[in-house]
Length: 131
Image (cartoon, rainbow, N blue to C red; front, side, top):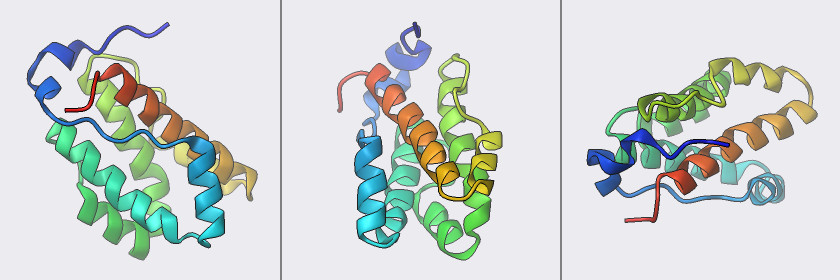
């Protein structure tokens, strides 16, 4: 069982938390849109992390890296999600190493999305109600 976020009573609690997105939703919409949704996902996820924590690359940089140097984001995205947990005093469920899953054809992408989006969803739930 996870502990409530240590930062939930501090200055981070006044920041708006990000939007939870269902793992199956992300997978299916990404497939239906032939990957276009992943561009939107990268921008919004980066922006939400930066807006909540005041740290991170931010939406625009996530978007640029996602489009120009996509394999770099395989490692950066889970790393940034893991840092949310670290800043809150919790053990990160994902790290940059999580990006190695994408080296496995197809199933690796499914596992990567499940791990990264799942960890992000759990973080937003623990962070409390949306501001």
